[in-house]
Amino acid sequence: MSNGAWTDQENDLIVADYFAMLADDVSGRPYSKAEHRRGLLPLLNDRSEGSVEFKHQNISAVLKGLGQPQPAVFADGAADHV
Image 1 (cartoon, rainbow, N blue to C red):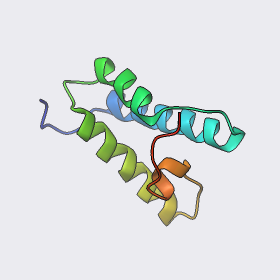
Image 2 (cartoon, helix red, strand yellow):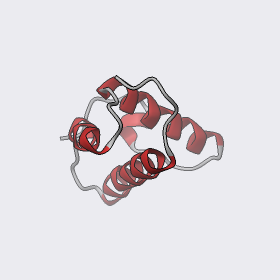
Image 3 (tube, rainbow, N blue to C red):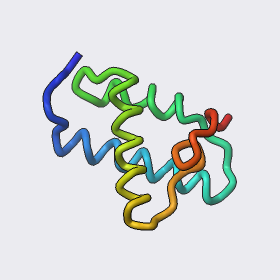
Image 4 (cartoon, helix red, strand yellow):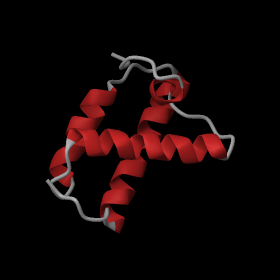
């Protein structure tokens, strides 16, 4: 597994994925956080599912700090949306 810093491309991919989940959440469309996470893995540099989850949580923390919305599955620790 990669322990190195995330590349700009990896950051672009995970932020885009995060905002896709947020758009689904705001629109009331069902989505699966786990499916999003697994879909990203082949596009990233040998990252683990846990690494992707942690990065998603970091994005949520930044948005929360800025007073912006986050998908419910990150904002309140709820279970995966399906």
